[in-house]
Image (tube, rainbow, N blue to C red; front, side, top):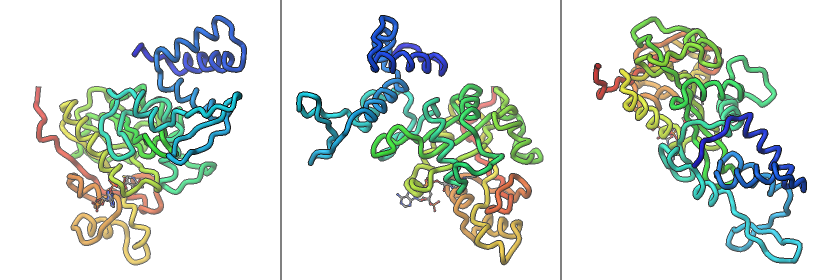
Length: 314
Ligand SMILES: CC(C)(COP(=O)(O)OP(=O)(O)OC[C@H]1O[C@@H](n2cnc3c(N)ncnc32)[C@H](O)[C@@H]1OP(=O)(O)O)[C@@H](O)C(=O)NCCC(=O)NCCS
């Protein structure tokens, strides 16, 4: 595969390709079309398929295959997303394959579905104000700053094929988990991860979310596994995060969040997020209050740490 163009170059090429397909078959436009197909850039192929979809009236036959009837009455089978993502997908990017989903580093074409997954996971509507939600530009900035630390769970089958239904954002830091834990925004610097330290010896879990429609199917676990692998590959000391006490909302009437967090740490109460993290190998250390504005969690979480037993000092 040839080098992938930048987002601006892609947009310019897509404009030429659309013009070629709309009938303006200048040499320049046709060359852009040919180059895109030859280079098999997923972004452009996905765009072409989507455009094709808009133009045709697709039907489904008894085998579940999609087709359309062309001008001469011929049945033409449509290459569907499943086949396409499985066939032309850049397989070297796949970190982990789960049923119907692959975990890979986040790509520019995931930005909008990454944002949607995150908002949906936290119950924030599309138009609702959210000062802590990443925008598409923020996701692009993360990819630029620390590409191997950004993860997307991308559907490879079904109606959401090509879209991301789970996401994880991480950065590197030299602050060990034994240092005082900063509030979330201070810890990450800004929404574009300004505090990321390229040589930091710890991975810091910035965000993680799975679209509610796809929760409890092992996608979160897959996103953890991919990040454990990253910590080992980068020979980092370990990984820590503040796991949000998302189940506190159901107990808020009977106890304060510090007591709730202690009971979760002691295993007396199961929290949908922190208990899951404890079950995945993290050690819960202590409750962190006033971490980030998250009413369901009483703005609090638990410091969770995973030490890399394979870490080798230089
Ligand atoms: C926390 C979160 C990311 C987990 O994602 P997920 O994809 O549901 O995670 P998994 O499916 O891997 O695991 C969740 C639970 O489902 C169970 N599960 C996994 N596959 C399953 C399946 N096929 N059928 C039934 N249950 C299953 C797991 O065992 C796990 O429970 P356990 O911890 O008791 O073992 C997700 O719930 C979420 O986005 N929550 C809202 C945002 C949030 O809290 N983010 C984290 C902030 S720190």
